Structures are given as C-alpha cells and as structure tokens.
Image (cartoon, rainbow, N blue to C red; front, side, top):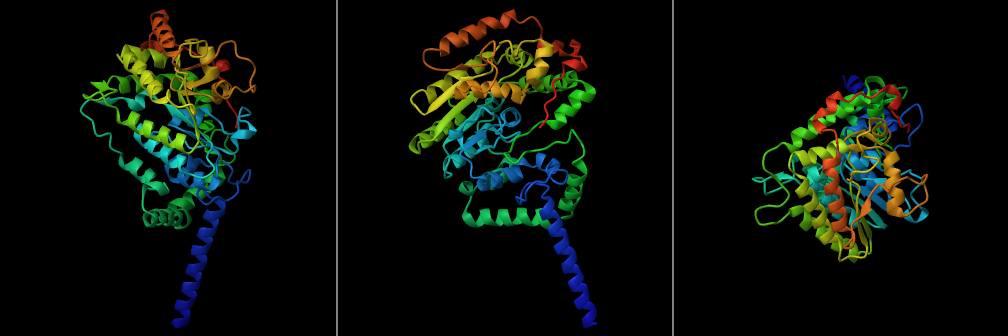
Length: 406
C-alpha cells in the first residue's frame, strides 16, 4: 500500500511538473517572460484578452524608459517599434489598457512616474472617458479596474502585491485554463488574423485586419458608430460636476506636478477620430464639452515647460469622410492605425521618419494657438456633408482596405 501511494504521489508530481513546465514554456499570457519563438508561442491570443493581467508585470520587467498610456486607441495606434522613436527614448513600452477609465489611467500614470529610469510618458486623452452621467459624482473604480490597480506595487501593500503576483503566477502555471490556452497558443501560430499583443505591449490589430479583409471595413465602421451613438446618447452626460470640478483634471494636475518634480517629460495627446465620430460628438450635443476639455487640459499643462499638449481629434484630410482614405488611416471611426500613429509621432517628436505629409495631422495647443484652433474646428462642422447616422449607406470596396502586417 505504501509503495502504491508513493508511486501515485510521484506520478502526480510528474504530471503537475509537466503541466507547469508546458505552460511556462508556452507562456500564453505573456506573464512568465519566456522568450517568444516563431511558429511556437510568438503570437499570444490569450494575452490579448488579459492586458490588465500581464501588462503591469511586463512593464515592471521591461525596464522601459518611455511609456505610452491610455485606452485601446493608443494601444492599437502607437507602435513602440516605430522608426519614429529615437535613441534618446530608449526602451519604449505600450502600457495602454483597453476599457480602462480615465481615473484608472491617471492612477496608472502616477505609478509609472514613480518607476526608475522613466524619461518620457505619452498619455492619450479620450473625450468619452471624461463624460459621466450628472448623478455619478464618485467616479469610483470598477471591480475590473480595482483588480488591475492591485497589480501595481504603488497601489497596494507589499504583502498584498506579492500575494496577488503569486496567485497570478500559480494560475498561469497550474490551471487547466492555462493548459487550454497554451494549446490554443500553439495552434494559433499558423493563423494570419489571430489577436495578439507584442512584447512591447502593442496591439497589431490582426483580428481587425481579418474582419476587414473577409467581411469588409464597412462592417467595422457600422459596428463602431452604433456603439458611439449609444454612448453619446446617454442622458445628461457632463464633463464637470455641479461645482465645476472634474476629478480627473485634479488627478492629472497632481501627476504633472510629480513629473515636473522627477524631471520626466510628459506628452499629452487627444486621440484622433474619423469624421463620423467627430460628427457624432457634435450631433449628440457634446461639442462644447469637447472644447471645454481641450481648454481645461491646456490650463493644467500651460504652467509646465516639461509638458506638451496635442490635439489630433480634428477635421482634416486624414479624418475626412472619404472611405478610401479612411481605410488607410483608420480601422474604424474610433481607432486609428499605426500608419496615422507614425504621422502623429513624427509631429510630436519632430522626427523625419515618414514621408512628408500633405497636411499636418494635429495641432499643439498653446496659449497662442488654442482659441484660433477651436474656432477653426467649430467653423468646419457645418461644412461636413454626411451625417454620422448615414454610415449604413456607405460602401467600401475590398481594394480600399489597407491591412497592416505585424
């Protein structure tokens, strides 16, 4: 009996060790840090849906010098491997998290600013993240955001952080779910349009490229505009509370002061939108709030020499309602491609890394440019011919689809 139990125990340990070893080598969540091998585990579909799990740990181990923050827009639009980054930017990591609230993004910014070796942080700003129902004044973190924040060492006690880290590693090594995801990771290597996150945290949008190729980019446009119209049609959305305060602006001001104290450069940028998205903002009555957001951001930034503010949410030849051009620069109305992201980087970094554009993609908001810029964009609104609600009538041919390969 004893011999049987011993053999059973040894066999169990061998199976558990094999399970952990297989999951560790495959590393489906990009949590262990195992090197990526082409045709084996280079593509990480399971990690793509778990950015709040792996990115806090990956950022810590990557030892980045330059960090990109925001929601899904900069995650999909600003590539850390872009040739626009210069030697002075060092190691670049995309720490943008899809679906993260503005409050959680700014909390993450404070964490990044306390990390060693950080020299420059780029923060994407999104209007939808700053509009709240008037009766929601707490702006409290959602449970998902709370779980993400507990993975940031500065947001919890050392013991709680280590317990969370241990639990995440245990699940990544020993769970059956991890085993299934490891197998799925290996199988997915031969698929061209599998969702992925790179080692630098970038979303190459391979899944969106697959939809655009096989179903047409108009499907992506329609789905996004339906979502956008529902979002902006919510009743009584406001930028400021009844006392004229905005909690996120207070958090941003605190973060900017911390960056100034630590001599870290900050670049804030308002994400670009396609013309349909911009029109939806106006048609649902939020254009004034959009201008107020830009003005409030300028007021927070203006006193600091180490902070710049850019507005890429503008009507221009890149956001115009021309479907062929839209397919070149945008996945859909709310998410820009890295082709447009490179033009943004070239302008923000003053780098000669792209073919000279026919028109600048954005405007730096300063004391001498702010009012003129806001007036110009306001004047362009009536000139836009198509309504965002008529997106269903737009037809985009397959040869207009520009698919990115990463």
